[in-house]
Image (tube, rainbow, N blue to C red; front, side):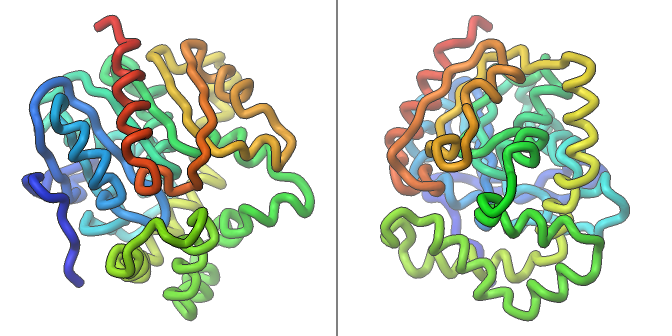
Length: 296
């Protein structure tokens, strides 16, 4: 399987937590910003945003562990794919590249890694940007009754190891394609070869993707509950840009985020879930405006 690359970016393999090898693309100069992809995608989803930001930033774009061309260690307990471990991956990559502090922007699963990085490493994260997701604790709490069917895959991949992997592997192409198609606003966001790259990459990572999601129904949820009980919040500027899921499911997304992030800006967007590819200029604008809120 050939992994597409972002034009103008140099690629290297860097060790994360426990020595797991991460595929990382880097370009540009200036303040560092790390871009973390979501499901069912790879770092390549950032190609247009990354090229734009590289004009005035050092842009670091990894494949998360378990995805794309990064290492996919076998699940050895919940910590293997906990967001704490995945956040440590990113901190170690930044260390290797010589960046003590950096901005962090995450989409979907990558945003959950970003939230955990902000909670665990507040001295390292200058600002945190979140695209189209809620924190783990709030995600589970807002899903009720038949409306929860929009997140049916969360429940499937929360099951004990074995059965969900077998079920997904049996129809892997159709499973992953279904999200790309259902969450694409008008069916025109992805060129055929890009869509196929995401499907192929995900088909080759069924076990690790399920492990990532399983962690969010166990250890990640436990960590969020512990932090909420302790009153821990994100101390850096936080920006959230999202579809209006609250109107559909009956919650106030800005209020939920503000409980975690006192220094919050929240804005809706007309794009669909894959907003970094549908409206890359708008997302680059969002990142730059968020960066200006930093005092250090």
